[in-house]
Image (cartoon, rainbow, N blue to C red; front, side, top):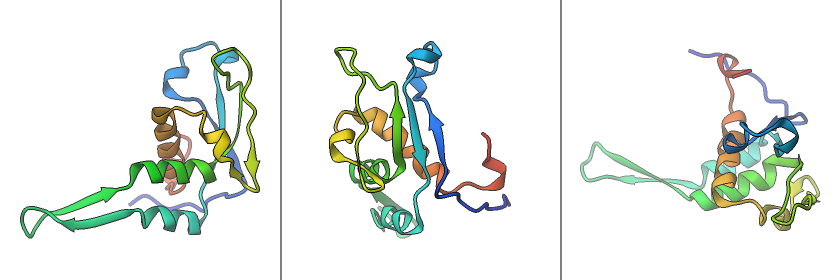
Length: 133
């Protein structure tokens, strides 16, 4: 069984969206992400509900995907570099305390936000075997 590791809640890591990785490095948008705290991870877990399936041996899990993406990005995005709007202007990252502002999050596309959310949630529960992958 993989050994769990302690999360570094004060550290960030850089992430480039999968569709942007083939671009020249100077054209890539780099998102600075951070792990979620215990309270934040618990709130995400509470967004999952379970119910019985068609038979008594089946459980159906339902996840509020939009809420999950918004919440994890709000608390897991610490900033970005080289995020450009349609006119070629760099988009300023804004925060409210330690969280990304809703105004900042509104400019991220839905599929990009889902990818960022998945990365944040995944990295918020790493095991020793997953470090560096």
